Length: 257
Image 1: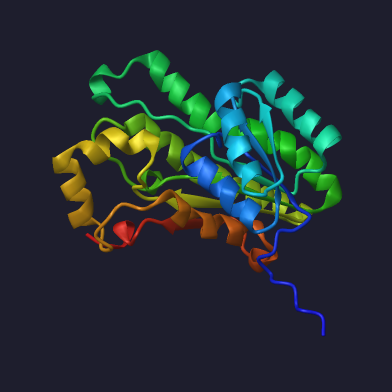
Image 2: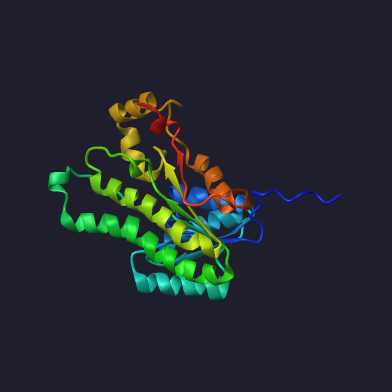
């Protein structure tokens, strides 16, 4: 008897994950690879990308590294065209590339504000549009935009980041409204506080660490590999009628007061 295919099986799919040489992007790429997908990892640092690809390939996965700058329309166009024409049609896109810069809002430099929005928000539009233009004629494709728990709230010193992630959440809904009729599924994942390189300084701050542990109903930070299941779900046939949804993965942080 033939074994039924799991709706979470990504065998034969090609997934592009931006900002994936480390942190949550790397964890997502690893999870998609473990579900059977071929992976294209992306970033601007070719050395870091090479190391990340080597790590995944050594684990038996099919991973290629393609360096391009998600904040440059020309670079994005060249990168997406290369993947589509050389590596194969993109079935899954994860817009993960992002940055953080902390400062009191009254002192926040204008150029940093622009940089945060360009990196976190404009890149989602630019990469998403470039990939969707290939997906639409095929009438198939999954786009996952990485939002944040701060898509709904904010904290001192991160207002521009929160604003960018709130916009990513609504851009995700807008993409779904425009592109669902073409057979695309566009959803978002909103991570809570995870132990990543970006949050290392926060996790080493005893006061902040204690606040996270007390404020989060699960009593701890998230581990990067705990985000992978949500990505596999949204990338797979298991979520084929899920569209325009933001999935919070935060240990119930946003569910409590």
